[in-house]
Length: 119
Image (tube, rainbow, N blue to C red; front, side):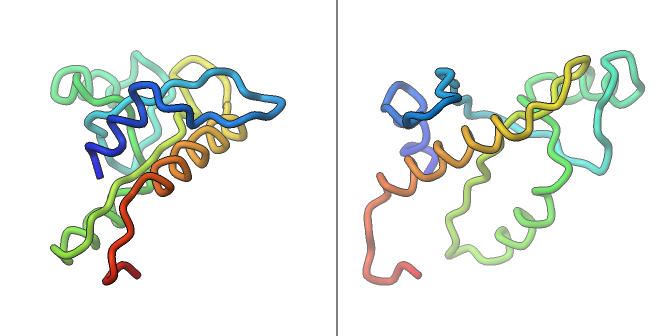
């Protein structure tokens, strides 16, 4: 799934058309996960992330339980698609981020091969 996502992120058209077609970009990489929203780049959490997870693209507060459950079933191929809706020091961009993430996820699903045992 990661290879399909990389191919899609490298330039396949996935943004669709619409009033907010703003040429979003997709990034694949590591995600830090935990119960804390990082609201200030001078906070203790931001400092800890800078020291120990500097290569993380974002902080996720929801997906850890999902991925932990998926890990328990080795037959599942899973991938989490995020829309970056909050940036430290900036406002909430949730509606646009959600639409862009949904467009990417639908573009990815459309490219996956169909298999007889798929649910």
